[in-house]
Image (tube, rainbow, N blue to C red; front, top):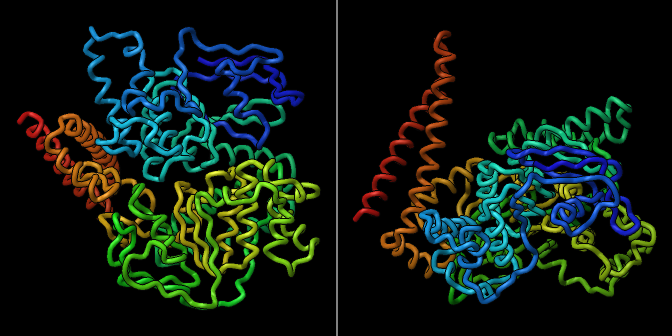
Length: 592
């Protein structure tokens, strides 16, 4: 499919690859990993013909269709669904004589709705949507093309966790060759079959997902050299968290946490281009209850979102907020911080505490003329320069870097500087709203590690499942205008979303939900979409039933079949009957 032989690739005077070779095939989902500047994006440019090799050969199977996510929108006046349709060969070549031609529009509509768009938005022009939503349309366009090769560069950056979960399911069904650059390790773990490592100006292909790659690479490193004392101490420290949480009362959260810590243990040994040393400072005042909210209605005058909220946040609270895009997660955080979105009710904040807040647009608020040193000096006039330099070194700003202007920084460097400023304020409670959008994998892991040591509360919204599972002790779900505890883990939340898709409409707003609820009964495209989703549930449930039957059969000879296994088996059969009934109801509705 894709063959690279003795390739030499350079960007300017910087040689990225030298005598590199690899062979990739259809059906592989390949995660591309490597430290910053090793040539991951340049490899994509090579494949797309935007960069030429210095030497060597690379080739693709003849007539291969390549799909990738464009960074710009061409045709702002085009309607969403028409923009997505325009990429398909049957549309381009006007094959209206083929029956497949007439199946494309409902498929495009379903794809856009799976990416978070409402049915009544599909025929609006692109210019009415923000940049983040336009990037979702470009992603839809790439997924809609019947490609042989799919290139995805940070595909989860503009998505919420619900859409990330859907994209994972989509990629598992993809039959071409997919190459994915991502700093979201849980996403890579869930979808990739192989890992292509760019290191030492070479390409090395590993079988397995990112965690398997890390374990393999770590074993190679440990065979070459003994583990250093500093690394050993870090592993011992991380193990203490496994021991502490394995005895906790939240069994499912403890299991998820243990898995994440295991990944952090392996990651700690991997070589790094920059060693970060993030450590939260002890808050100035330690208090038990930090804030409470009760009898609260949250949202906007013309758009109330969450009703009658009641929640107490304590010094050791580590809370993850779940809920589809637009239900009010960020709005809830704003109500707690400054009451700007509090319509009714009360928010009581302990007067002694400090609040740290990292919002999605926080990095944009940095002064481009600032330097890391001037930025922190202005906020902390009591700190000496050497003290600030030492502190900044833990965030990758060393030597002359502390005096470089923010204007020259990457998004990741700006995010690191912002996080440094927040931590230096010694907050009691940390509000994080999509903090990882600009952070590389190493920084995400370091942040997850350091938050476990944080002697304060955390309220987080994130699409990064690794970060959530590493630090969150309790989830709260915003659904149907209510904030309630969610007792399961993220796997349970995935199942909740799949079941919810077939039973109730989206709630982007009260008005939209009403319109969509009516359209379910009248729109044949929506009915067909729901039927397809129900068929997916039926297939999944049949697979589970077959697995249960295989386990029960294997244990039957010992007369020791666990009661829970039998109960899960019976529950799966009940769910299958429900899904089959749902499908028949939809079929009758379609025929009526």
